[in-house]
Structures are given as C-alpha cells and as structure tokens.
Image 1 (cartoon, rainbow, N blue to C red):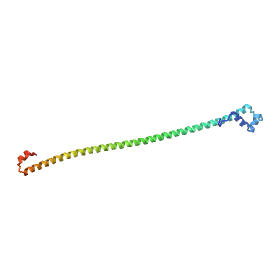
Image 2 (image 1 turned 180 degrees about the horizontal axis):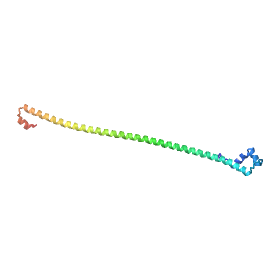
Image 3 (image 1 turned 90 degrees about the vertical axis):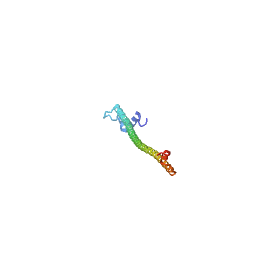
Image 4 (image 1 turned 90 degrees about the horizontal axis):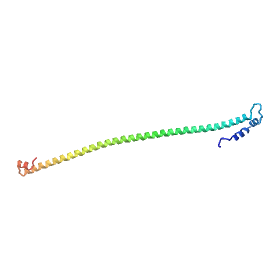
Length: 157
C-alpha cells in the first residue's frame, strides 16, 4: 500500500497517544465526545493525510506535465531554428548556383565568340595567303617575260 496507511493503522496510531486513548475510554465526559464523533475525528485525520498524499501526487504530476510541456516547447523551438538555418543554407546554395550558372553562360558566350573570330581570322588569313601566292605567281610570270594580257588570262586577280 506504500505511503497510504490502512484504516486500522490510522486507528492504532491515533489511540497510541495517551490523551486520545483516555478520550476513547470515556475519560473526557465533560466535552461531550462520543465514540462516533471520535471515530469521525480519526477518519478525518486519515483522509486528510490521504488527501495530502493525493494532492502531493497531483502536484508532482502537474510539475512533471509542466516540465514535459516546457521540454516539448524547447524541442519545437530548436527544431524550428534548425529548419530555419537549413532553409537559409539552401537559399544561399541556390543563389550561389544561380550566380555560377550566369557566369558559365557568360563564359560560354565569350568562348563561342572567340571561336567565331578565330574562324574568321583563319579564313581571312587563308584569303590573304592565296592573294599573296597569286601576286607572287604574277611576279614570276612577269620576270619570265610574259606580257600583262597573258598574265591576266593565266592568273586573273
């Protein structure tokens, strides 16, 4: 039964006090206490102790419940803060990836323009080289004694 005493234990504890025993035996006839009123007094003492124990248990449960609520609230706040930090990290990562993508597009555009201009330079260089060869051929023909009309027919500009 734990801390709660039985009714018999309560009666024995009450009667072990000498004044209470004398009252039970009828030694206190002037106060008008009857056995019924004395028994009621014993029951009230016992139920007060039981009520006190029950109230203490209720207080304990209330305190445990309050601590559990506070712990749960703290846990939720921590979880909320952790989720908020994760979201910030994700946002920063996405911003960085967006910036990297923009830079990659710019780099690819520059590389494409560079390839185009290299192609144009190679084409123009080939045209210039072909023209130089043609001029050199015309010069060689002129040195061999060809006349301009024949040179123009053989190697037109």
